[in-house]
Image (cartoon, rainbow, N blue to C red; front, side):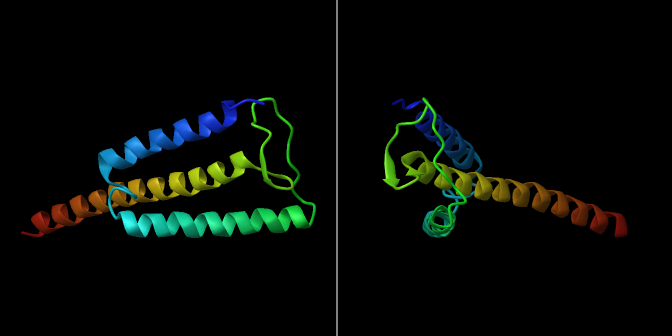
Length: 117
């Protein structure tokens, strides 16, 4: 039993949180909306996992880096944290791309306006 994998997911999530905080990309931009999106993502992917486990598509992998704690048969504790991390990373990246592409589009439009003058 080890906390290595769980700790790496948590530390990675905290690092994403720092990026989010710095540029206000997701949770630090609109906290209520972000928490609802994370909760919906967790429920969706958890349901997906449970269906796959029920159909015997997914099986719990054995690793010395994992805690060995299962929240349900074939569903390790780390999976819950990974699902939240996956949703969080996706939404932070979405916010980053919106910010970058939005500012690039604004610069292009303002440049066009000045060229037309």
